[in-house]
Amino acid sequence: VYGMNDWFADGASAEYCVADATHVARKPVGLDHGQAAVVPISGLTAWQGLFERAGLRPGQRVLIHGAAGAVGIFAVQLAHWRGAHVIVTVSEHNADFVRGLGADETIDYQAVRFEDVATDIDVVFDAVGGDTLARSAALLKAGGKLVTIAASSEGSATTANHAVFFIVEPNAAQLGELARLIDAGTLRPVVDATFPLASARAAYEHKARRGKSVLRIGGA
Image (tube, rainbow, N blue to C red; front, side):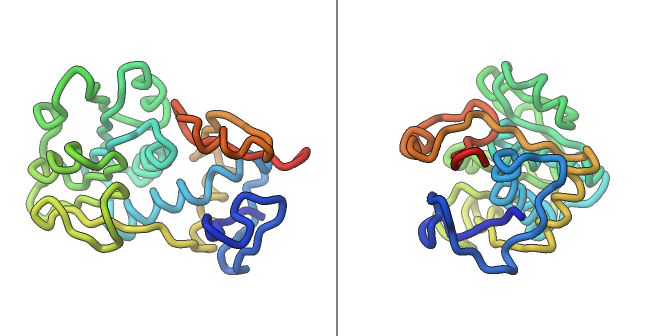
């Protein structure tokens, strides 16, 4: 199985942890346990932000900030799978990487201001916050949605009430859907680095270039 447990308690970074049975699902068959471990929190965050909060539909134009990050990688792939036109902000050295995940357009945020390039946006998915979040609302079409995972508190509205922050929740049914898509070859997780459990502090201090870091317990 794989799943999402409380990351502050009940053995969050320990050899054994406690998780509600409704918060786990059968892990993707094609992944080892380390690869599977990076999926739940990032995949669920992307799924719930794009589909539940923003209601992303086929044919819509979505702008994803932080596309090479742990959550952004899944957001790009899921938006592409849903049939949206996927525009991302990313550093130039990650442009080919995210195009390989399904991005239709890449904007080098270090070279240009994204608001000078992106137009007629239906959905903004923000994993960066700060000035990037503040500059995004003006790009939305009438009725557009902006969701962010980089604000202050669940449900808080920012940027003139256009952006709503949310916190991911465990969901066994969605974990099952993510596993199905992974085993079908539609989604793939990205492991940036792997650390032994004894080096947990180093793992948390590690700044991933792409994807997410993994703590490995024994030979799991």
